Amino acid sequence: MNETREVVVVGAGPVGLMLACELRLAGVDVLVVERLAEPDRTIKAGAINVPTAQAMYRRGLLPQLRAEQDAAFDRFAQFRRDGGMPPIDRGRRPAVGHFAGIMLNSDAVDFDDPEFAEVGPAAEVFLVAQQSVEAILGGRAAELGVEVRRGVEVIGLSDDGAGVTVDCGDRRVRAGWLVGCDGGRSTVRKLAGFEFPGLDPEITGHQAIVDMTGAENLRMSWNATETGIYAYGPMPGRVLTVELDGPPADRETPVTAAELQQSIRAVSGVPVVVTAVHSATRFTDNTRQVPDYRKGRVLLAGDAAHVHSPFGGQGLNLGIGDAVNLGWKLAAEVRGWAPGGLLDTYTAERHPIGAWVLDWTRAQVALMRTDIRSRALRAVAAELLASRDGATGVFKNISGVRQRYDIGGGHSLVGSVAPDIELADGTRLGEHFTGAEGILLDLVDSGDLRSRAAGWSGRVRVVTAKAAQPRELSAILVRPDGCVAWAADGGDLDGLEESLARWFGARAHT
Image (cartoon, rainbow, N blue to C red; front, side):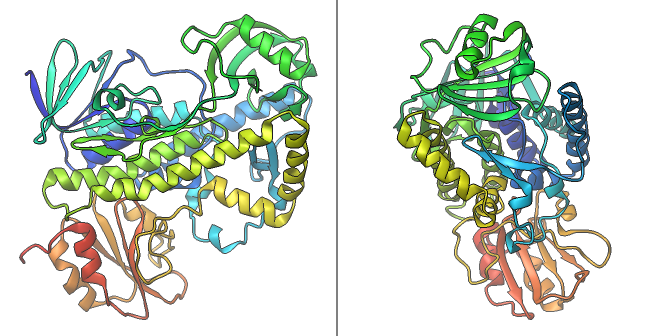
């Protein structure tokens, strides 16, 4: 036995790094181990949704996200210039995403819908690639003092009920808790014996950044053909193909220029010649999910807990949501103040969101099939998605603004992401999440409220401020992950102490 840690996180991708940052923010001694010696530069998700942007905004990372988006827009603008297309208007999104490669026109979306209200400045950031998110979180982890060890492979683990012994080959680490954030082929999931039921794949996908000749004959954006789906852009050399004739025979060997060239030609019908490969990956629509994200003192997050096709970049956002939900709960367990059953709410809250994403991606694969019935269904779906109601409804799902947890409570806000309320002092609610505590926002300067909350000092911080605009809401209790745990209108404080105890443990003696 070489060392002891409170938590070991396996995997230094965005999910593992986000979780480690959340734990370290709460003072937890956390070690991250990563099999790869260097960050993975393979092309992956190209955008983030609203909950991901909000989570990073609450931790002060919005400026870094904006800088990455500005750089992405520059590359996008160059791509359009090279293709002879009109310049882009950075203040307007011509499209807001896609469903099965059917683009959603921003003009069709009703952005005045109440579910888009008070999202705050996080809504302005979306075009941020997974590699950029990982780099930002890597910098944040370093600032917080998180130790990340690369080139370390987990080869064994043992959970004895009091802790987990992690075998890393040349050393063993004793941890109170182990979290697998090590991707779809998770070693932790396999070693711990998690079940992983689901559906086998039926497609072969490629995503790559390449140099090629003949690309001027490829159509921009997403395109359905008689032989599959392909997308070209929005960055120079970025191409994606989907062939629906079964999964790849080999997932392990590096993707070659010849393989990509064959796939692009087969799906697009354009005789491109791929001359260089800068980044490439294969993917399928394998869809699986563990029934419970926890097994004793071992937990899973991100792709280790659920896999699906990558359409829409849902995996990155789903994993970040897992990390944010789990981080403060596991920290509470480690610190010893967690109320009974708090850690079990991780699976209870996140499993339904994961199951929804799996269904969402399965539906897209169904609309990509090339048989005559599926083509007819795709035409119907395209017509619906061009309508105001259809485009608005689907974009609310894509953006994540509809996500909420079924945690009970009488107020309509309970279970949803907290509105980013603008305050009279010029700040917004999201700017007050600088530490690991929950926030109790007192909008009516209530001495009674502050007195009732005093027993949870150190776990919940009371912020007293008036709203910039008049509103019925008088107070709101927000968990560290941004979820509303309690809210009141008109000064009614019923249920406040019960909610504080439910989410933040027993009242401390004062």
